[in-house]
Length: 459
Ligand code: UGA
Image 1 (cartoon, rainbow, N blue to C red):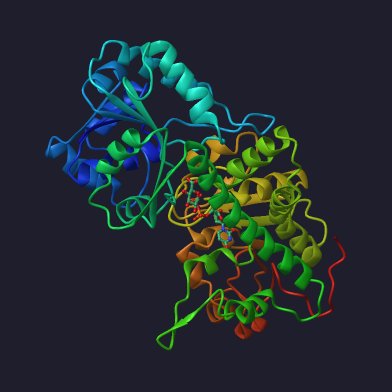
Image 2 (image 1 turned 90 degrees about the vertical axis):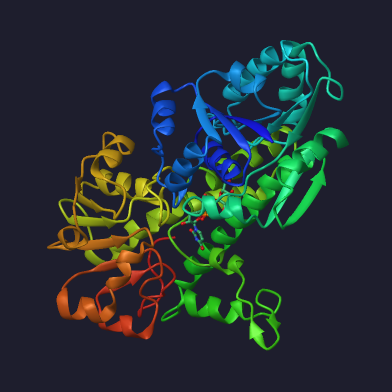
């Protein structure tokens, strides 16, 4: 099928390259001419496993091009996906300005098109946005009605950064929200070769499925962190061991043919220094804002955000607990990306940690295996710190080393390795690296671990 995609960010580019890889013809549109040029040369503007390789193949097979010309893209395709950003506004509502602009532009392009066209909202939007914001704009500018002139769908994405290509190629489900059956049938054709469950539902249900999914995972994380924070008050407690006992509940981890299934959901029930990224924080905030507008106070989701806001700062508190006043202390922050396998630092717990350390007048040194110094300073403007080129350089001669991202590289910091190479180092563990017995041999404190004397002083 001939498809066009507006927006070559994370979702747009992965979807475009993914669709081209399974044989669809794809035209990607972006207002950024430099980015378009780069993409057409086969260079991916983002770091994502296999993306560049598949982009190059799709370009060679002439199944993919990028352009700045939205009109051309709409006129030369049967279906247009909207994958533009929907960032948070100051009041936590989502900013629909790109969505509105693009809906109007697609409508104007359709004015000159005789054939029926499908528009699909792929960006994450609050319930009712597709029906109450996108639809009226397309109708106004195209002077057409759904059903005859165009069709409308909402098709949320479930792509994890770092696994986005794989998640696209092997989706656990495809959700098709449709204004009418004809629209849904047409979108289903795009996905006809995927062997997975396809859910056909209303536009608002599709929008809400996306928010609910992210809100559930974020809730599990904040729940784990709350249990970890309580555990820290119990002398000698270990939240990781506590959770081990919980994971084995057969409703979480069923035994099938004598074997544990070990579902991936358990990886969201793991204490740490909080969730970040461009999705969980923004989507939960948006759902809270939406709910408040509808005059329902979402107490649980507000608590999820509240716990998550404070969680990174617990690492700083643990550091103070061990070494006192942080003024002029040399502190290494290990890991800047919001999670491993990405160079994305948006809403990363590292930001809150660095801000707090700088406010307390500590000398901050950072290290990340992928996020480079240039990226770093771009995102952490006005926060003075040094960026180390290697893990070794970062941890050398520091008063404390804070582990913020669970990068594979940090796994080499085993208790044995630390004991023989960095015996005097203090580690503050934000990701559960040192939760086993061996760790007793090293100098560390961690999230979810009750210290020997029991409760820490702070709340
Ligand atoms: C998330 C969802 O997992 C995707 O399904 C969804 O499509 C995407 O948001 C989106 O809305 O676009 P992503 O933000 O890439 O994907 O990240 P995850 O791998 O789900 O992790 C999110 C955050 O939770 C990370 O900061 C991670 O470190 C944190 N996390 C995860 C924890 O703090 N604890 C855990 O136990 C698990």
